[in-house]
Length: 299
Image 1 (tube, rainbow, N blue to C red):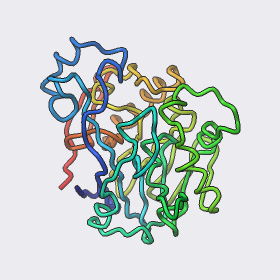
Image 2 (cartoon, rainbow, N blue to C red):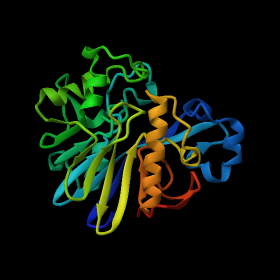
Image 3 (cartoon, rainbow, N blue to C red):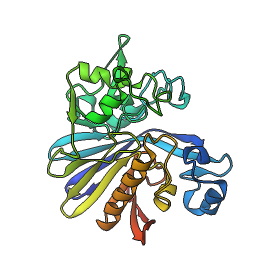
Image 4 (tube, one colour):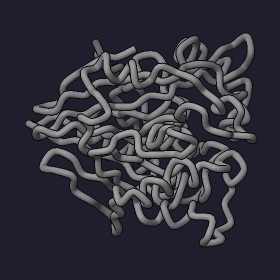
């Protein structure tokens, strides 16, 4: 349930929360069709797509970064005991995520920083746990880092029209607002936010207004944690294909192409939030498109 690699002076440990069949491929990525998935069967099956059911296989996972003496979590999955009436696959889970985190050598009190790449139901869930019928911060000594644009967009008091409102119902109230009320939320604005000399958050809007990618650059090596910039290798081959959950389709396409270009041009490891298999991949440019070069060596 855990696997580790090193990028320069930073170690990355992947901690699994959940893995399974998630949604019909042509519904998750509406621009695709059955012919595409069948034609890319060798690449996509079985780690990313199940041919028998036509469903995308997905993971919920947290990446634990140890950088400059701090323990940093990138995204916190769906969480346990959450009420998700319009996304039941992630509702009322009861996983041993904290046990998996402990197996990676991390207790909740050890965490210094929690990065939510964006405010969505499957990226903020373990921000909080249920205690005496109240949602309280899971990581009491951590600062939780949010892009202010996402925090404001998902705050129901602000009245924004949100494409993903139903599937994210209750999410802000049980997994984000308690962090602010506990005084543990750090909001950042602008295009970039530096966490330390190795790690920089960069705005990549479209999927949500505040979707951010976390760039890691250390000792000449690079990786980029891209959250839901893409959900499947299909979107590496076809970067103009959005998921059905993107709030601004045009911006999502622009952000995806920009980040994929940086990744290919800098020989960086691409680390999406939900890929199965070996979970991260190197890519290369092929004209205006991209191809997969090599999968990560998580061990």
